[in-house]
Length: 290
Image 1: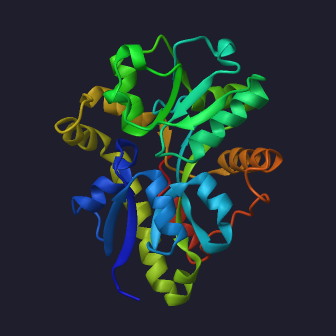
Image 2: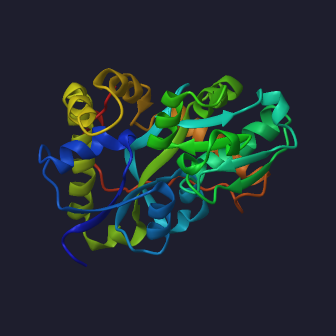
Image 3: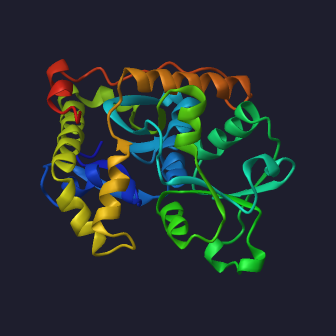
């Protein structure tokens, strides 16, 4: 195996606090980054084309026998997430029997929306992927409802084209009282066999990057605002809504989500949460962001 780890990197603003210090040289590492959407990185990890990546939480559930979870790393929220949004022309209760168009870039958010609509609100919809980007549609051709994630969700929220917008993190928290874990960092299970020290260094780099990014969030936001559609203040507010830890209440939220996925027949079984067992316990406490 090459000494340089192939690491998946979502091309979204939400991972900046972790990847910015790695990409800018503030934290040393031996990574080669591969960029893609969540769905693309899920596929690359599932086929063994990446060593380590952030993946959708449903991807871990579907292929948990292939992965180990990196400790104390996630993209989670306790309430608003701000970048996983359902846009609609109609109030929520009037979406029954309508078609919801979805971004093809997400797996977790699609399953979460289906669960929320059916279990929490008793709404039945049809779901189809968009055949072309929403920005290519005219106002007249906009879908009745559209689920999207990441930077696209942030962009369309600013445009204020749809009269109704629901934040899936907020809906989940209101319904369950639990955090929602949208993504995990995982490594291929066989990576553990290529040396404990190598995997420990990988985990240390990620945890140190998280700590640096959250301590220096103002720098991260200021730099990012120069090349994106969001201001520094908007980025700070957005990123402050997210948690990059993986704590006890997040385990509860993740396990409940997996239970619901199993009940709905979306996954074959409820997966155990199996972590890379190579990190000293003091490493985790050192790099806690809260």
